[in-house]
Length: 76
Image 1 (cartoon, rainbow, N blue to C red):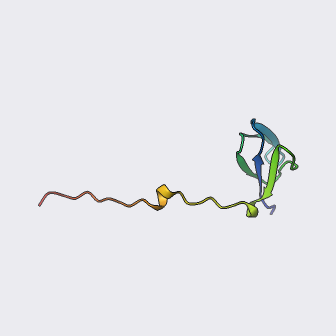
Image 2: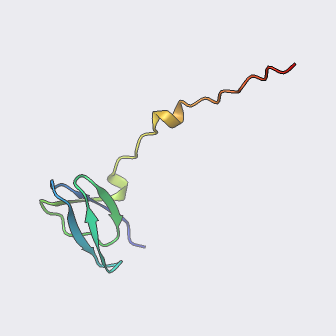
Image 3: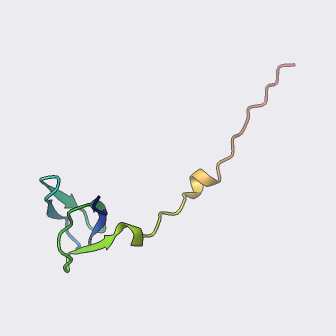
């Protein structure tokens, strides 16, 4: 199985590249990334990296620090 590559748009404008495996164009906004098995050649517009070299996203504080608050029942 082919390893996935991460393609990142480095330009300030939306750009597209042709994904040969999917058979369609992929449009990337500035700074946006996508995974593909058939990436374009690296150039001044697209940065191509292996999936394993990419940093894992950090856990969001909103999800990690949430505590459940119980409603106190006033009926006795």
